[in-house]
Image (cartoon, rainbow, N blue to C red):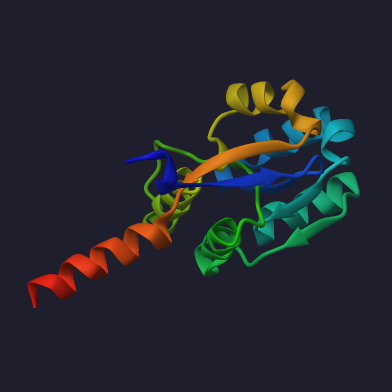
Length: 161
């Protein structure tokens, strides 16, 4: 791919952060958010339904709630990522348990990676992210220009018809 096959997008200084935690990791998420509350309140917080409800109730935080993960919340976050409306995902998942909505879990991780969104799946990575000097500054990310790729593929298909 050449440089023209990429697009730049700017993360604002005030990040939009999605918080997701499986049931066995909700306590970890609560502890992490409580510890990092001062930093997190400088940003716009989103969460899947149950995780967000717990955080809002226990910590009194203003959080935009999506549906519960298994009911489409993971997909709602993925849609926001595809629209460049989420910059960071903190997803404390349980890799040792089977989940009925595993396709949604992997889809969220895939879309976050595809759109070059910051993704933490454990507390150590989340700690590095929240303490980064880039956390409160604008940041320019580079993303593959999928529309340009689609047009190239379509042109090649048309040539073969």
